[in-house]
Amino acid sequence: MPDEILDIQLEVVPKGRKFPLRIKAEDEELVREAAKQLRQKFIAYKQDYSETGLSDKDLMTMVAIDIAVSHLQLERNNDKTSFITKIQQLNEKLKDYLKEQ
Image 1 (cartoon, rainbow, N blue to C red):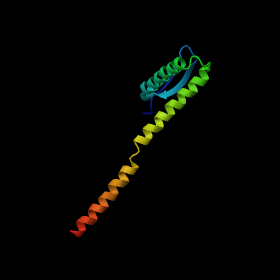
Image 2: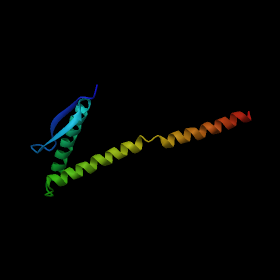
Image 3: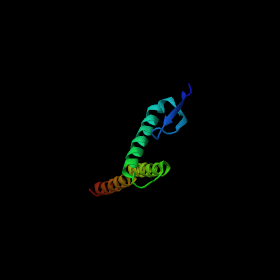
Image 4: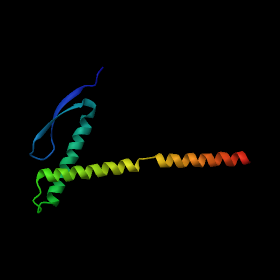
């Protein structure tokens, strides 16, 4: 049975344009939460930079950069490659030690 596809409309910027999206039904909650977080960050940036005269487009670009940096930090923190390599090295040292005994 193929995944159910939904057509939804998301309003990212308050009182702004609605964006039509076609998503899997199972992703709807995640997509709506992402849009909610975008709105919240946008509102915070709009308040923080209200004196600068930045356009909504500029502010949304700043929000996108903020989210991208957060995503990259999470990826970096979840990278277990160095941990696995260290475990393998310790495992080899332990094997060598046990062979000597």
